[in-house]
Length: 180
Image (cartoon, rainbow, N blue to C red; front, side):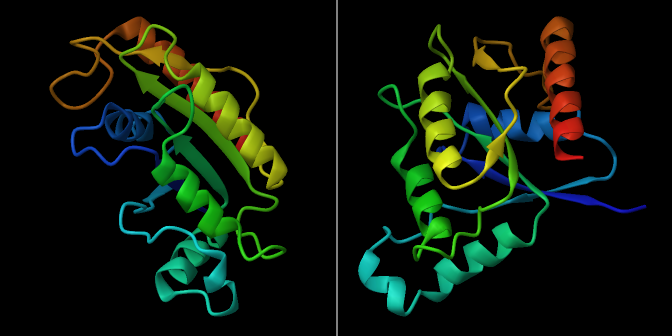
């Protein structure tokens, strides 16, 4: 069976990040042929255009892993109505030097969760704007802006509520069809 490789970029550094937990829970809803590669972004030095002439090895490794996948899954929190700096830094690294973006032509899903009432609506819109400029086609519908409360995740890390799980299954089914 052929596999579909998905790079996962979680915009949170926190060990118990709800978005990291969401990314893992989404994996359980994915088709059997999906293989997820969680890209580490917490160890990346800040992007500096001075590096464009001799891109650091850690930057090159990130770009190679992005190029090696079929699609991207961005799972982001919302910080001050936008995307976290660590996620933007990883995107800047993967898209530079100019004309050598690892993201160009990829398909992506954008999703996120927050304890705030509007979920991650603003962050997702900002992220979609950045990705559009980088020639990354994002799944338009369904959109998912999750408001996470106590008990959202079950003891095994899955989605506790059957209705929410069904809703997220619909999102994953749409993402899988989009990637195909």
